Image (cartoon, rainbow, N blue to C red; front, side, top):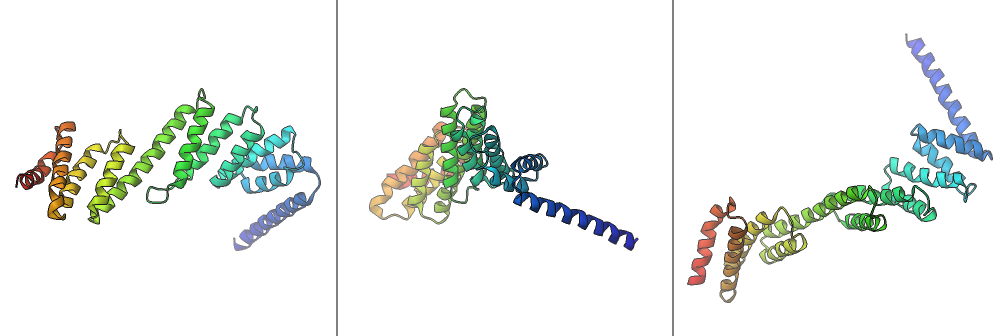
Length: 264
């Protein structure tokens, strides 16, 4: 049994070595037609690394031809399938700009933006790529307003904006937990201005009541009244916009304390 396994292992190794040897000879070959057909075959078999290596060698040889256009298109997808989205986005955009009348130009401009979307990090990290993704997706919808991909682009933009909102909300909450109430209040106010349709509005108003009250409590006497008034105003806004809010009952004692402080 062991001898049989060793024999099969030897045969397999020999096949692999032979295959590698043929591939290395092909890389050094001047037969560009064979290289092209092999690269296309590798691509169909999802061997994107070897396909990409051959396509890269063929770019100059087939530039300005139909094969050159095909190579440009396939290279972008090689990088995409290898999850190198930064380079993939570059090649998708380059393809669309090099072949603007191609039937694939729209697809490539969308894929360029989609790569930025996939490169967008989680909310706790820097959101530069998220903002770039929104910009590229918006650019696509402006360029192709009648495209069937516009609806998907808008959904992706909504997802990205939700991520930006989550990050801004997390920062505001962090300020509150750190007892930097002034920064927390400013951050909550900016949240409501920046995201007027946010689903967190009720929660933000609740936090505004708490932050303003705590800010007033720690303020010098000359500043306390206006800050207690801000806490009362936030409570009244919450009650007006969400009369059935579950937060109202828990905030009522704070609201009453703030009103008493103002009266005194």
